[in-house]
Length: 248
Image (tube, rainbow, N blue to C red; front, top):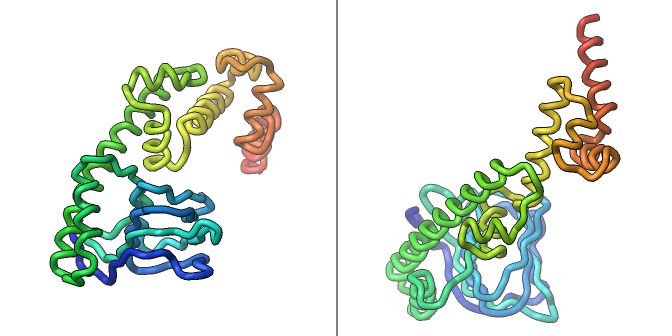
């Protein structure tokens, strides 16, 4: 990722009434959170900006930013345009004694110089560190997805963490970044899609519920309705009716 333009960079507390609603801009925002509370919301998903984390926001996607007035946000920030453009929201925890931590320390040190060329070079190095970590995070998410796809029962997070060698928080954060949902939510949707495939092949509802290891037919029907809007019987009846109407 190449920085085309460093629009501005600074370190400060946010101004009074710091609030942006449904903003859509042609540059990315790079934030390193030093203290305080703030929220970034995009596509109905709200993210708490956490102390000791760095964030990179996508271009031309409506978002909302807000803070807690009782705990004002202190952050190091930059507005940049890049090639290629940033397409998704990125959150990375900054580990001590890491290349990313070193890059942030340099960024903070040289902000007062106003040397745009130097700061651009530092931020380019910082972005390269982010990219390497993002690749690793995506690999963890892909490993998690393969694990979930290979199991038929509700995932045991302890077994998943042991199999992959990462903490629950790390796995969950990586999975949400890659797929926009938690491992547990993904598994439930994956199972529901598998159940629907079996029903469409003519399997009985009770047999599918038993195979999916639901405690009862009622609990399976309730879960099915949550994802597809109708009970299994009504869903199949609706599909049958649509086919009949299509032939008339």
